[in-house]
Image 1: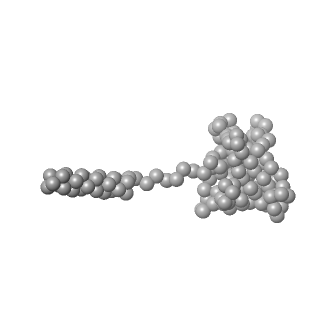
Image 2: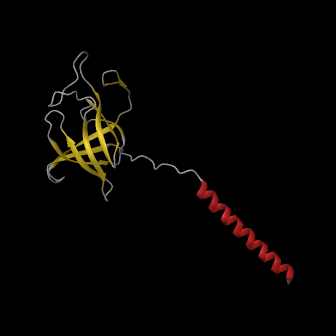
Image 3: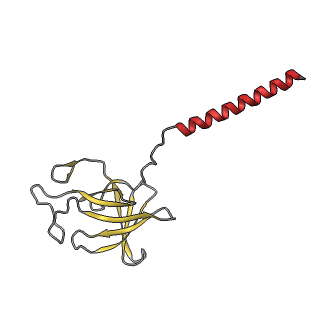
Length: 158
């Protein structure tokens, strides 16, 4: 009987030691940053003439123009204030919703008007961008595709 009792006590002690060691290893493991949200990255606008980079800005996401397709030698388009559109932030304050999409604002770089903006990924991995007045029902949706090229000198997508 003593042998069986000692054997059981040792088995319990080994099991407890293994569990404690496992917990210590998990606690000591390096913490990985959460993966970026799938809407982050560079996107080609629906007309193919712009590239928008979506990235964190504070506790939200923002999107800025990083590429503008134009005729060779043509100047970079200007916004309503006369500033270059290259580098202009057009998506602001995009925050996730319970439905899995993002809500914020989008500014038309040509007119300077700001609208509500809803972002989501469709089943093909394309970014759907809906600009709207007041409520998303009153708006228009564009489909942006992942940008896979590079941006050359002067904000030119290649």
